[in-house]
Amino acid sequence: MTDTRPAPPPSAFARLLATAGLVQAADQIALAALPVTAVLVLGAGPGLVGALVAAQTAAWLLVSLPAGVLVDRLPRRAVLLAALALSLAGSLAALAAAAFDQVALLAAAAFLAASGTVTFVLVQVGLVPQLVPIAALPRANARIELMRALAGTAAPFLVGFLATRVSPLAGYPLAALLALAALVCAATLRFEAMPAPAVRPSVRAAIAEGARFVVGDPLLRAIGLCAIFWNFAFVALIAVFVPFALAKLGTDAAGAGLAQGINGLGMIAGAAAAPFIVARVQPRAVLLFGPISSALGAVLMILSPVSGGLAMAALAFGLIGFGPMLWLVMQTSVRQIVTPPELMGRVTATIQVAIYGIRPLGALAGGGVAQVFGLEAALGLVAAAFAASAIVSLASPLARLVAMPHRAPAASGL
Image 1 (cartoon, rainbow, N blue to C red):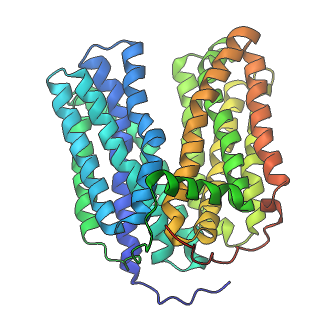
Image 2: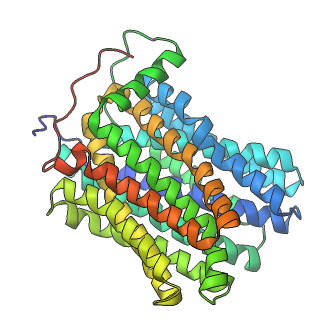
């Protein structure tokens, strides 16, 4: 596996990394600020809060596929700057909506800002292999994921502090400021433009081409299936953990939240350790460790009422954060290598839609099983889904990947 491209200046990836960190910080703060603003400013109840959060997160499901076509079809620099401008506009609109008590506008603004983040991530995944050599992909992806993990862990605490000490609206000006900084940083980023596509089929045909590539490639197909089972399991676990902790672990809501917070620390540790680990072990070891460690975490969670209590549950969450973060870094690197550059946006979008499409089903299944059959049965479902993600990996080419694959040749068209 060789990479004969001339190396871009190191500052190019550094600027992309800084932009990604600012975007993730803005997105996570906006996500954390939405329920706080809805409750403290708009007086919303749980139903309205859920609807607002659904509007924000729906962007990953509704925008990814058409945005993937745009990323593959239009100049990436233009799409990048437009995506960041969209995030900035959404944050400013959300602040205005909350200030003037406009619930519908707040939902639309949250969707708008999240749409910008979705599109940025699609561009970012395709830019990384342009800016770093193949051998450096895991390290580069680990640094980006570390930024995301730090932002996701810190945002709820920061928004809560600002809401109590400054203003319930303070999260949105901060998100807008970070989005503006990301836009300024991205404007200084220089990279080689992709050749314009010779053929432009319809958007529907272009989306279908990306999906066919994912299904037809054994590595991508396995990655997608593993991610679907894993996300089903994880969201089901989140849906039932608080009732489980209160009923079975003898703790309160604060204790349950603390245990869940260890998941974020596990993700941070995984992203920080990823460059060291992936440089010293075969790719298959990392790609198997992620789902297997999650299955082990589910077993620890099931055993926690009789052994270890809340501490055991926290350990389980830490393991479910650490191993899958290593897996995420490695599988992203594999995807970037085996996917032709002109298909990168649509391939990434296809996998994102599969992941975010399964999450509501995981939440419904976890809650439904807990309601009908009990909390222990719901955790059994979680363990079974995590085990399925491990079995998919063990039975796939991922288990035989002793070295990083070769770079994909150019695709036939767009």
